[in-house]
Length: 332
Image 1 (spheres, helix red, strand yellow):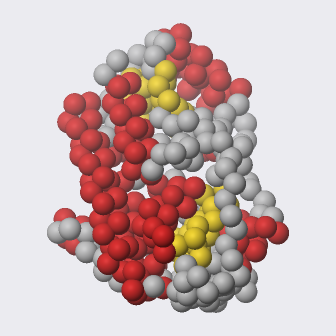
Image 2 (image 1 turned 120 degrees about the horizontal axis):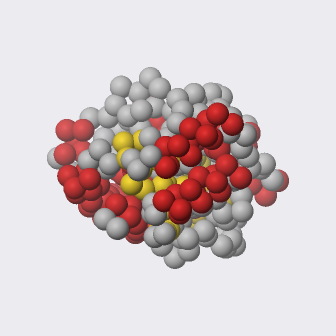
């Protein structure tokens, strides 16, 4: 069997907690002029560091693969990090709902990445003309959350794939939005934030092109996903999801896969229609083990994705690696 890993599970790294600022303007805290940013995971923490440079201090709550954002329980240390933040970046869509429990009393701007997805319920979509003309950093009041707003409604949304960081198109909007938020907090740094964001956007446009290449070469190829994590990448590559209904959702929720659904899954794997098996390196169980073993027996390559950045890798590099792993598997 050929087995490709899209990402390596990140080892925990210590990050310094933010200072004592709860103001929404640059120059707060200890008077060092830094914007305090608290991110739910290292995907967003890394982006904030790249865009903000030496004008920000970033605290990441989850940077270890041993911690599952779906079920993570916030600590007093996390509450302090949010209370001291000028900007809180969450994924939203039910993925990191623990953030919402920490926001009471916070004056921080709250940035929710999932709301930038075209698939987000009630989202009419973003202005793609601006995207095609250089990703203008337009203001979007719908995504400008103040700390005093109602942060309810971020529980898991039925039918919505909250893993939006695996959608380069959505993440282009997210990068723009983070730059806008930082510019509002520190207008003097706006040019630097925009330039850094544009560099990331250029890389993500390259990732979109790579997915288009896969789509041109392998459109319609059948794939099986043990968990919804890589769904956006698979869709952008034009691949056909053959996973029986209910299988991936049960794995994601940590519940047992129905016996009939498991039998159907094994039949699909054995049908010869599946080109690649896509898994989540951080979740699984006996059912996914059986499916993966069946894929191995059938000579089907496996691509294992991770929910967190590989240590030392930028977000764009991580995405390129994931897409390349998928392309290699399809070409094996």
